[in-house]
Image 1 (cartoon, rainbow, N blue to C red):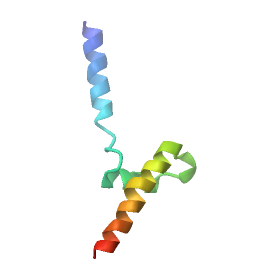
Image 2 (tube, rainbow, N blue to C red; image 1 turned 90 degrees about the horizontal axis):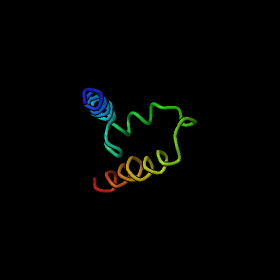
Image 3 (spheres, helix red, strand yellow; image 1 turned 45 degrees about the horizontal axis):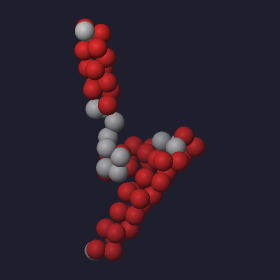
Image 4 (tube, rainbow, N blue to C red; image 1 turned 45 degrees about the vertical axis):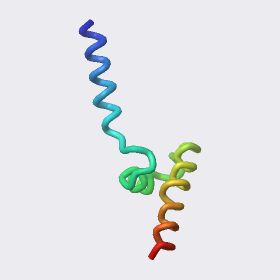
Length: 61
């Protein structure tokens, strides 16, 4: 029982460390990461959430 509790606690703590995909913090973190280290999913999400939203914001103003 203790082992399960320890494992659940570890998973909870580790999952809380990474920012939500598509958030401003996530976009900044990915910009700092070498593009050669990006996964295909990260590249798609970056384009959808970071580049597209930046273009939308420019159109509004």
